[in-house]
Structures are given as structure tokens and as C-alpha cells.
Image (cartoon, rainbow, N blue to C red; front, side):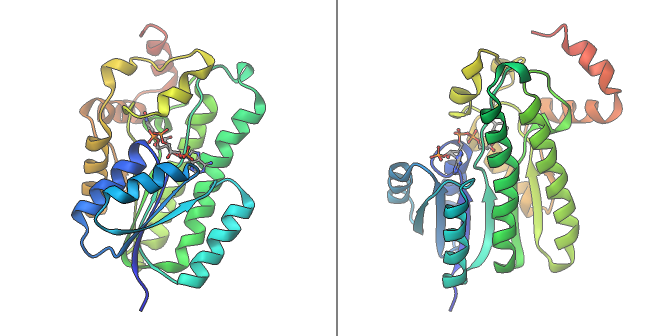
Length: 255
Ligand SMILES: NC(=O)c1ccc[n+]([C@@H]2O[C@H](COP(=O)([O-])OP(=O)(O)OC[C@H]3O[C@@H](n4cnc5c(N)ncnc54)[C@H](OP(=O)(O)O)[C@@H]3O)[C@@H](O)[C@H]2O)c1
């Protein structure tokens, strides 16, 4: 009989690792958690801390050969994927002209293309009441100067996830796009490489624990979008009701 599986990408750190801990604690019907990221040693260490059986899958989600192997693994194991959590991703801040194009295209490869590919790969193995959780960002709500490619990619994730939620609704498969503001993870070790920092980062930072708790709660409530802090909810609302040009103008004066 096929196993009930939770697939988590980006499990070696930050939000992905936190999802692994909380799913391990809360979801007793999950037989196996599949932990995906490039740093194998981190995944092995994490698997030792979890009660649930795990499968460590060290791979680069943007690499074609690695993804081909993942498709083959799915075909071989035919799991019942009860949860798919797409966390693998990164962002680089800086002007479009200042970040090497290879790095900017790399962001699109991981955050956009690989997330789409991973979702597509898992679709045939989803069953009634499966949850898909996609890590978008509050950056998805508004174009962001000095974070242009990342924010555009996250807008894609938000739009893709909501469309997919509508496509899968009648199959009782629920998709939630998670849109946090700054979260205290290793994300910013890479993000600040080109010398730019996020507007009001310190004042708005939340913990991964809080984001994941809210995401699992919102996924359970079949919500298409999960936003964890009141400040980010207000930001989302503002981007819906105010002209973006006005918000850009206001943001020029914020530090
Ligand atoms: N932290 C924030 O402020 C924030 C806010 C909004 C949204 N998000 C989003 O949340 C998600 C998780 O970020 P985080 O904050 O948890 O950052 P993080 O701590 O840096 O974790 C990123 C994870 O992605 C994995 N990853 C990156 N590139 C990969 C690749 N090519 N193949 C496989 N795995 C890859 C990393 O593992 P390896 O390096 O081992 O491969 C790591 O496990 C991202 O999509 C991010 O955009 C973060």
C-alpha cells in the first residue's frame, strides 16, 4: 500500500525546516516526510530530530537531472502526497543593474520555474484533502525597487497558486500561498549580498514558528492566501485599495 507522504522543499533551513518540525508534531497520519534541499548533511541532522520516518533527498530543485531523478522516484514509490510544501527559494536585494544577470536568472529558476516543476511533478500523486503550501512573500503584493526580480517572481507564485487552487477545488485539494514579510531565517545572509537591505526589516521581522503555525492553520481553513502579521495584512490591503504610484511615493520617505 502506498505511503502518506509530506514533501518539503527547502527543508535544510528556515521555514522549510520549521514546517518539518510542526508537521512531525501535528500530523500523525503522515507516514513519511520527504526532506529536500541541496545540503544533505543538514537534512540528515534534521531527520534525526523527527519522530516521523523521513526520506532525505539531497537535490537542486533547479537542476534538470536532479528533477528527472525525482520524477523517477515518484513513479517508483507512487506515494500518496498529503502535503506539498514548496519552500526552496532565495532573494537577492539590489538594483537590477547591480546584480549579475546569472544570479537574477538563477532566482527565477528556483523561485518560479522549479516551484512550478515540483508542483507539476507531484500533481498525479495528490489525493482528496491534500494541502499544497507555496512560499510566496509579501513582496508579491507590490513591485519592489531594489528587489525587482524577487518580487516579480513572488507575484508569479501568488498568482499561480491561486489559479491552481481554483483548478483543484473540485478535487478537494487546497492550495495556500504564504505571504510573510521579513522572517528571521538564513534568507538575509544571501539577500543582503549586494549591499541593499529591506525597508523596515528589523521593525517588521517575525519568527519562522509563527509564520508556519499561521500557514498550517490557514491551509486547514482552505484559505488561498496566508498572511501572518497585522502589519503585513494592512500592507496587503493598502496595495489593493491605494494606487501603487501613491505607495511608491510614500515609500520613498520611509527608512
Ligand atoms: N525569510 C524571509 O524573510 C522570507 C519572507 C518571505 C518569503 N520567504 C520565502 O520563504 C522561502 C523559504 O525561505 P527561508 O526564509 O526559509 O530561507 P532560508 O533559511 O535561506 O531557506 C531557503 C531554503 O531553500 C533551499 N534552496 C535554495 N535553493 C535551492 C535549490 N536550488 N535547490 C534546493 N533547495 C534550495 C535551501 O537549502 P540548500 O541551500 O541546502 O539547498 C534552504 O533550505 C523562500 O521561498 C523565500 O523566498 C522568506
